[in-house]
Image (tube, rainbow, N blue to C red; front, top):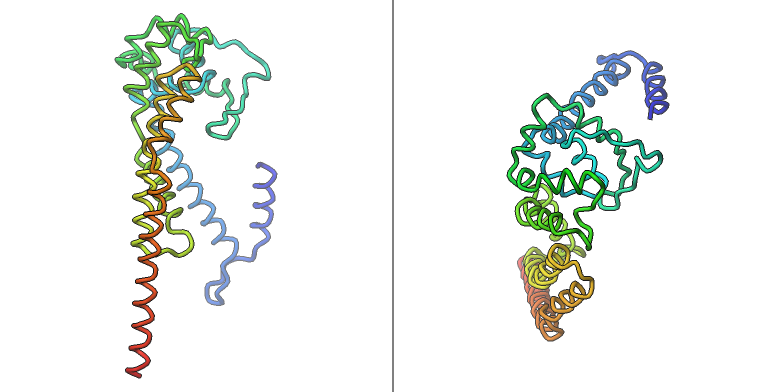
Length: 269
């Protein structure tokens, strides 16, 4: 990244100076554009990352992936994080990126004085303090299928009171993606809305059962049974045919209306 930026600076310095009279926008304009970009970049970074430096959001990290849970628990317990060598960086499949645990610990250590006490004031963390200090800080994974009773109790509260908090942006993005899928191929707004409603009806029972399987049933056999049940409760092939027939009818009506309008316009001409 540094070499790329150095190359950019070299190119920028080689630009001619601005000459607005001749519509030449060169070095000065490029410099201002770069400065504006970094101002906006820093503002966006602080708006999105800064909130995680506040005690009211840090407790949510206890429900993260195993290694990050451990780092948070060690920080809360005033314990040092041992150097695990290459294992201090691991690939997080959920976010599709590498996570540097040593930098995460540095981030926590750099939080303002008193933050740790405020985090412990969180009801869920305080309620399960022994499990966090004695188990999570020792590397026990909150999401392990064979978690002990105290860790399982913490997981239940995390699922009941923390996981249900959804970021409104993520929900909006999910809705936009759904509409994009339903509107592919230039479908009319009416058809896209009908498809979106049908997808919601079709996927809701499956998503609900998957969530239940993920958080409530450590047994893979039980999880599979729940998913099978969800699939059985989803719309049948007859339902699919009925929806398809309605959409085809609407298309025929729309084509007929367009044809009639075209004929009328020709006659008027």
